[in-house]
Structure formats: C-alpha cells, structure tokens
Amino acid sequence: MAEQPPPRDRDRTRQLFGLQLEVTSLLLEAERRKLNVLQKDLQSALADGGSIKAKEHQKQELILAISRIQAQHDHLDKEYRDHAIGVLRNSNCGKSNRSQPAIGLKQTPKTRPTIFGTVASDLTPKEGGNCRRSLPQTTVQGGVTNGGGATDHDPSPEPAADYDNALVYRDGNLVSGSLDALIQHMVPTTDYYPDRAYLFAFLLSSRLFIKPHELLGRVTALCDSQQKLSDKQPPAKEFMSQERLSRFIPRLVQLMAEWSETFPYDFRDERVMAHVRSITQSCVSVVGAAGEERVRREVATLLQNLLHRLTALEKYEEFLQRVNAESTTSNIESLNMTDVTDLCPNTSALAQQLTHIELERLSFIGPEEFVQAFAKDNPHLETSFKDMKKTRNLESYVSWFNRLSYFVATEVVKHAKKKQRVRVVEFWIETARECFNIGNFNSLMAIIAGLNMSPISRLKKTWNKVQSAKFSVLEHQMDPSSNFCNYRSTLKAAMWRSAGATDQSQRIVIPFFSLLVKDLYFLNEGCSNKLPNGHINFEKFWQLAKQVTEFITWKQVTCPFEKNPKVITFLQASPVLTENALALASFECEPPDNSLEKERCKSLKAEMTS
Image 1 (cartoon, helix red, strand yellow):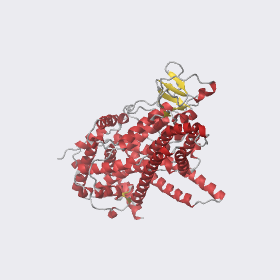
Image 2: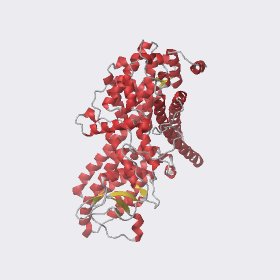
Image 3: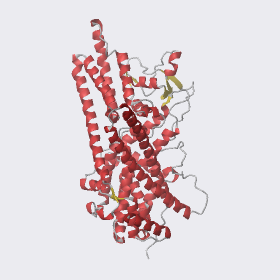
Image 4: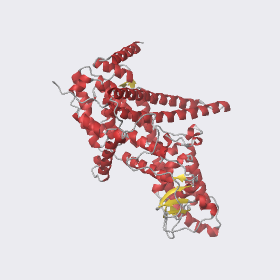
C-alpha cells in the first residue's frame, strides 16, 4: 500500500495566496485611481470642446487592464477564502501563533522589519550633538564636493532666513531638508557635482512632491540663473565666461545622462523632452569652438541611448498586448495538447527558460514604478492623466506570476489519466527545485502556488502517488510564517553568493516579487514623507533607495543560459484555463468527494452549458 503523503498545510497556502491578494488589491486600487483621473480629463475635454478620441482609447485600455487585474483579484480572493475555511475546519481552537502575521486585506499597515533592517524613523532630527545643518552645494576649497554627506568644510553661520532652507545631517548622512534645498543640492556647478547615491535617491522620491517635468524645469532655471547661460557677456569677460562654462557644461550633460539612464521612462513625457531640447541646445550654443564637438558627441550619445531604451519599451509593450490578447480559455478542448515536457523534457533547461523570462520582464520595470504605483499622499500631483504613471511593467510582472501559476495548474488537469498527472506534478516539483538552485525565487513561488491551487490540491488520488518529499522541502524554504523568515534567510545567502561570484550563472537573484513590492509598500506607508517642521524625511528615502538599488542590481544581470524561443513562447503565449474551467477540469480528473464539491461541480456545469 502506498504511503500517504502528509496533509497539505492549508494555513501556509492561505498566507501565500493572501500576500498575492494584498498586492493585487493595491495594484487594482492604483488602476482605478488612474481611471477616475482620466474620466475627469474626459469631462473637461467635453466641456471645452476638445478632442477626446485619444482619451477614449486610453479609457478602454484602462478598463481592460482593470478587468484583467480584477479577475486575478477575484481568483486570489476565492483561493484565500477556500484555504482559510480549510484552516478553520482543521483547527482545534488552540492558541494563535503570534509570530505569523495575518496577511489579508484587513491587515493594518505598520512598520515591519525587512531584510535590510528596520525602516528609518520619522522623528525630527534632534539639534546639537552629531546633528548639523548646512546649505546645499557646500563646496570644499580646491575640489568638487560630494553631495551624499557632510564635508570637512564648515560653512559660515547661515542667516536666519536660510535656516529652514538648510540641509540637516546626522553622523555625516543627509536626513532631511526642504524641497527647495534638496533641488538646489542636485544642481551641479563648476566646482560641485551631486553624489550619485543622493541623485538616485532624490530622483526616485522627488516625484512624491513634484512632477518630473516641473523638477527638470526648476533645475534648468537654477542652472541658468547661477551660470548666466542666456546672458551676453562683454568681450572683456568672454574668455573667463568660456573657461567657467567649459567646466560646467560637461557636468550638466552628465546630470542629464544619469537621469535618462536611471529613469528613462520620465522622458516619455513631451514636457520633459521639451526641457531636454532646451538644455542641449543651450549647452551646444554657449561652449566655445574647442568644446563644441565634444559636447555635441556627448549629447548625441545621451539621446541615442534614451531612444534605444524607449524603443525597446514600446516593442515590449506591443509584445505584452499580443500575449494578453488570448491568454485564457474556458474550454479545455481548445487547449494546445502539446505538453511542456514534450518541448522541454529537461527540468534544468525549463528552469533556465523561466529565468530568461523573469530577467527580461524584470529589466523593463523602472525604479520609479515602485513609488508611483502606490503614491497616494499627494493627490494634487495626479491632477491630469498625463501626470500619472506611464508604464504597467510592474503590474505585468505581477500578472506573469499569476499566469505561471495558472499554467502549472492547467498542465496538470489537462491530462485525464492519473499516471500522466503524477508525472507532470513531479516534473514541476523538480523544475521548482532547479529554480531554487539558480536563485529564481519568483518562478519557484509561482510553481508552488500553482500546485497549491484548489483544483490541484484537491486531487488526493494523484498526490498519493507523488513523491512529494522534495516539494515539502521547497514549501518549507518558502514558508510564509514569521513574515517569510526562511525565504529571507535564503535570499540573503543568494545575495552573498551573487556578490562574490565570478560565474555569471551564480550572480542571478530573482526575488519573490510580490513580497518585495509589499516590503516597499510598508516602508512607504510606515513612515511619513514629511517631518513636523515641514522638511522632507530624507532618511526614509535613503532606505527606499537602498532597497530599490538592490532590485536594480538584480535586474541588470545578463542571463547566461542558452535561449530556447519555442519554449519561451509556449510558456508565455499558450492559453491557460480560467478559474471555473480549472475547477471543472479538476472534477473531471477526480470526481467530487463531498457535498460542497458536488454542489460546486453541478453549478459549474450549469454555468458552462448556459
């Protein structure tokens, strides 16, 4: 007699689906905010007699995106509730485990420890001791200062009028400042260039307080007023002016290059590009003949790189539209009966193809998307649809996780014979193990979620024949208990391996994305953006930038494995069964064994035939 496998841990599964449900709910809320703003734009356009054709097209795209996310939300909600009911049935009313956070929609947002330590405090920095103030762009005699921390040069006491415009440092680290002072601090001069870490942190967080095109406009105005770019110099001063500008212009071009390299999607806004054209024209016109050619080359390189990034994004978005066009089906007969094991019988090779997909999709997520997706503190920044997030790469990546889970479940239930289902389940368990070894934790968790979906987990006769010891080990590693403590330890180990790796394959770290999004969301929600004195809480944004910088490092890794286009297309484009179709196919595989399942099966059949 076959040994009975251990019962599925419904509480663990409930928490997994609860996390996905929570993140999907946040994305759904963000998309609905977009739709509300767009509808206001439409009403204004109708009242003013303006063109509404383009806005109507955008509205239809948004409604489609919302319906897609809503469908995912409804499915996850059902899975969450089903497993929650299972936990209640199996519980003995014992004491609750307080170390396991409730991961549900009603959870109260609070500050949580993350793998990077406790998030920054939002207390106002105390005066005296190791706390100091200085004005932005504090220069050191004889060199270019670094904007990321305090310098050895103590500025003379500021006038009282400048006190609130100062930057506040603690232990050499910038912790707060007014928006004006922080903007001033990112503007280069002939003797100063902002630290790259500061520049990234400020460009990432500034969009919570000022729109990117307005920020670039402020930077342009400050450069013009400080360097007199538009002034006509008298002949006697022309030589000195050219010498000064020859030192300043390369720094300004470098600032534009770093901005466009790190946040290229900001430049999809025509208002931003208008400032870029103005800046580049000024740079070329004010430098002397000797430096003109060099500046032209640098500007041309900047614009070519930006065009390359934006063109690649457009192609990727077109690809996503094609893939999403017919991504689900309710008819099992319409499925491609070719099995993934026929195309790719080697589990290691399949894990490598999944890693290709993950890294490609990760590469298109802009760091600003983490901030913009959940930004609610400043609704005045979203007064127009064109001021809102320009991309859906983050949402598409979360959708890919859900699709992969559905794909795994579909691959199991499309086989009528138990022996074939057992083979497919074991194949995916082994693939998940290979994903774990690679460091592809997102695909690993999606496979675990797919095998834990109700239509699969209920197949008791199938699971009785599965050698599930390896699966139990993987589930333990990705256990949601104690805020995914086991996974976080494993992720740290993968990061250490990546940091010291010479082999490209060992540099791969693909995090469980929904948990990363949740960590960033709680970091944003757990600390206020501004301090009681009106200063921006930059200590918080250092922490936010630190986590997003880790993400950028992970997404920039080149996948070293050989690519199999047929397998990659099959994984991304093959239709998968809808929630109801999966449930019905599951009942066809193994008949209902209790009254609830019988009632569910009966209603599904009636729904399909109607």
